[in-house]
Length: 66
Image (tube, rainbow, N blue to C red; front, side, top):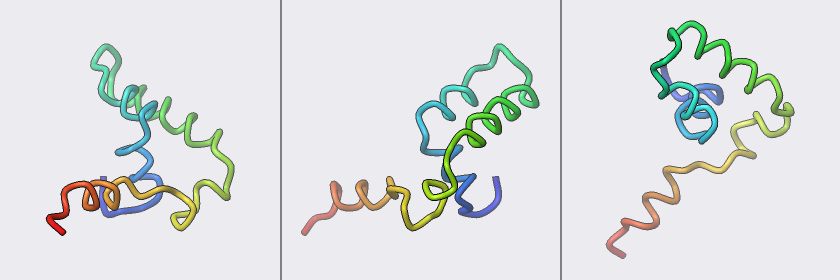
C-alpha cells in the first residue's frame, strides 16, 4: 500500500477487509480481488475520506496524556 488513500485506509482499518487480507489459505491475488469486490459494494458517499471515521483519531484521543 502506498500513501493514505481512502481505499488503503479501508484495507487497513475495515474489519472485513482485514479478515480477508490476513487469511493465508488463498493466494494474495485472490484475496486482493475479494477485497476489491467488498470495496465495490460500498456507496460513493461512504468512500469519501471526510465521511469515514478515522481510527487513528480515536487512538490518539485514548492515549493522550491530557
